[in-house]
Image 1 (cartoon, helix red, strand yellow):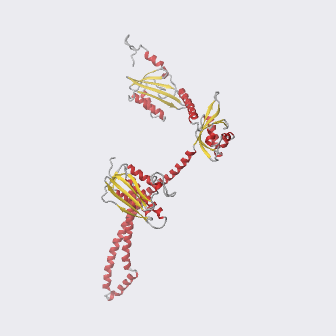
Image 2 (image 1 turned 30 degrees about the horizontal axis):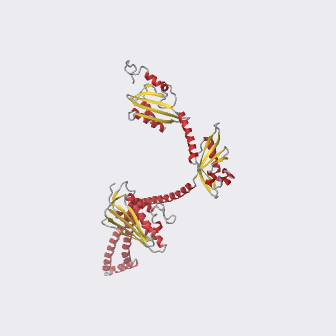
Image 3 (image 1 turned 180 degrees about the vertical axis):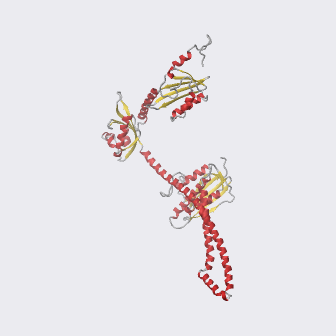
Length: 544
């Protein structure tokens, strides 16, 4: 605190200077010690009866820090932010802080606070500047109207009365809508509004009269060519000298092109959702594969048991065959042995002994095939890890070829030429699997287009090799090849030459994105009518 009784001639303020200073301030001011307790307040603070929680009910001796901490948990985010700032000043983290904030009640009030930490005290100045904020809001509204009038002169600017009748239109109307000046003078804007939009159009005009400013709204106007142009408009009240709301200013912008673009984007989003749906189906298939794995395992175990049991029974039957030969020599057992031989012949035991092992073996091979597909599906659909891991690119190719089998098996034969000495690469395995899958599916579709339902089969060849510090992946097909005029577009998102429902135009775009993400490259060599070879180069190791 400033000493209240300074020595004469010491340069210290005279007695009562602090009180006089506090009372001269046009704010609610308090001095708070570093422990957070209020030491001194001015008369304005002491007489305050409003709702500002940083002033109301607080006086000398009160714990200001505790009161501020209580406000930090307020449901009003503005108040909690201000409270945190004031605490920062009290704790010495911030030497000076100025904030403005609204306080909502029956009507919104605006307050400002200046907190200054100096010496052994913290000074808090609170003030009400609601009136200033209201003036600023009116100025902003006027500025918005001014800018809309001057900066958007090519937009449609019109003035309407309380009945929605147009009393003025800018010269941009006939130009934008394609009418000549004489034609426009013979027309009324309200008559050109689409019948389906007329009610909403008038409702927004009335809203502007009530609130002063309407929300943005859309409506259609008939242009000179007979088509409907789409406009986005907003209406604002034009106050006269008498402050009565007699007219509104309507400014509208032609958004027909934007709407068309939005429709195209919506179409693209539908295709993207379809791709996401397929991804979800893939995840579902992975879950089904997991469920299939357990019953397949015990079926496989049981078939193996049957194989071993049948082999044992066959051995027993062969031994019994020898006993039958011995028994036929005995007169007493000859008739019984003959009956058994007839039974063996009737049941065609030799056929069963030959075919049952073959059937069991085929069943085991089928179950092994199912198990490999399930394993491949689980590996392929694994969500992966956030960062790069070291994986075997050859294994990625083999797994993906199994998963994609249903895409290529009807139209192509698939060969793999994998370099056994190819080192493992550092990559994001899920994305690399997706890249390989897209290349194989793209090859299968190209072959299908080339064969045209002839029933013949093309050929897909997947190769891996090493080129210095790079792992090289190639997918070659005997499809249609890529026409020269679209070769520079094949990696663009949503670009596709396939029929609707056949492709989304995302496959090769994803291939390009994955290669770039890994610091690699992708390119192709193609010949129309002969086929295409896509080549992906990925770095074997990565520093990140």
